[in-house]
Image (cartoon, rainbow, N blue to C red; front, side):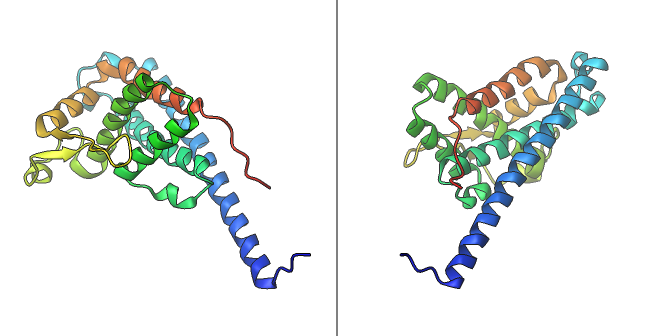
Length: 209
């Protein structure tokens, strides 16, 4: 017979409550963002914002970019948590470690070809650059002060121990220009949903209790 102390049982219960909170919270937030994404997509089509050439004239497109890039960022974190023994620390992964952990998980699962992984890697790297620009660099007008001390920006590695390359200032400008043009809405949406489809191919995971 295994003898559990009261402190062991209390700790075990606390860990389970935290796990449930992390799982329900992350999944619930994903559902909320999903509803908002659908709302903005409907508004973009209704107001024909995808025909505009400037994001200034397309507030719903701008909001859609913000929420969808954030959505993908958190889907990646949630994926890593699910497939790494529900380790809550994976909900706090930053760009480089997030990308490396994500694609290492994908390879272990064996659900994707190398071509799929390479194609999705490029799309995810662009989304994370977009999110970084929105939050830290200025979007769509990237601020000179945020670029002045750097010639290039590290590109996250798709596998542990490998170099991920880099983005030049010109690369960053090209990415910002692409996402700033509402006429790219359809192709951007296809790319975003392609990432979501890639994520959905992973097997379900049991919580174990």
